Length: 610
Image 1 (cartoon, rainbow, N blue to C red):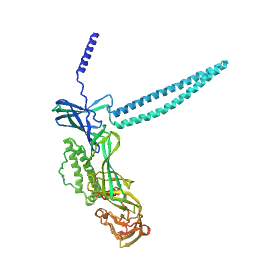
Image 2: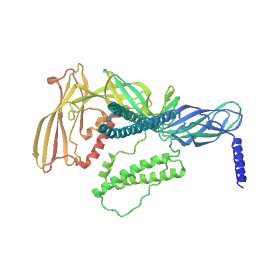
Image 3: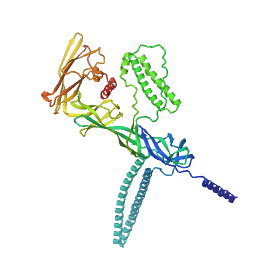
Image 4: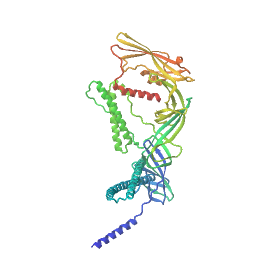
């Protein structure tokens, strides 16, 4: 009976072996070549050219070695001449070893380091055993020598040899132990470095291959090509600039660079690279607008506390609208698109209701609130020559453009804040479609003068760039006089100031000199009147519209060469304040600091870009 069972087992194994032998081996995959990449801010669209060989008919083509950071749902294929794509499917397969050569090399080095660490550990254990054996040998030798000495048969030469042998071996063991300790420390550092390098190179990777199965119809026997495209994550770019100017200030050279992060898991060798600010996951359908329905209900007179609640609701509504707008744009299903679209309308209802319910003072305050964040322009920069980018953790820099922009240099002095006078230049972007917001390194006469930041600047738009302080021009501010008087029920305070500019250069310079008048929150409580000025205020339209109404004083003046000391350029001005004599002047409460800071930042943004 047992022999019969064994015979059935043999037959079963033979049948299984025959079936396995009869199964056709899977066709090897083709990799193709990455020929074009569009790099977005956090993803990249990669396009491979994949050769298609074989006879006419239906073909199931395996495209191998897709990267770890691929977005599987983004796979799509386009057939060339004589090739019709039927379907594309993504799959993964477990393999015995890491498929990427550079990762395999790191794994081999890691295994070698681990083997060395294991050997070092065994050698340390052996040294420990050797020292323990020497201790036992000494424990045997000492009593034996004592006994032989008492009997008068002690062999001093033999005892000397045993003793010296013990000390020599202990010294050797100590030296070997020290060497092994040093080796163990170095090996631990080496292993940690290899493990970090592998983690950076293959973040999220495993012993898995990723493949695309392309089902296609080939109409002829001639060789063809298809395009396989897919999105990858862990890739992106950001702008960075170098601004260079000579002392004459006639031209500013703008070096527009891209800092690229490429950790997709595949190398891009000699590809046509396009840098884009668009989003690769925007929904195709725009949002719809729902009716804004209102009803009547009993109400209470508006109090200051209620005004704060209304303002908070306005701010929350805007934030929610921004959040749901982003979700609606990224929605891939019609159901999600409509759900987020409704959420957008509900958020818009909240702040539109504020326009109906809030009093004028609340509305005036809310006008200063930042509105919805404007989306940046959708720009694509196609680099003129092929680019190679390895998949690695550190950033890689590419040059997008190198242009010369006409400039108008001047100086800015704010003596109430600092005695330093700073260079600024008005530039107009006439070189590229858009300069995106990013960090700037500034150079003057090939000398690095500082760092800055540039806002997004459209083509034809004018912006301001700082070029550091000039030590040859100084400014200071002096209080010349202060008088106080009481007129009826009001207190009157008059102050007079002198502003001085010293120019140690051999040529005259143009300076924008700034100071300010008090700016009362309630003009009915405090009246501020500007007095005589020795120089006329600037007639710049932007200044007159944005800054002058808020008490900012600006004079556009020229300071002669070598004007210092007694010949320094001076500007004098005065102003008068009137208020109820029973009250005292003070600064706004600390709780308003955030609001006032936002107002200042908005003024600065408008000044630096117009």
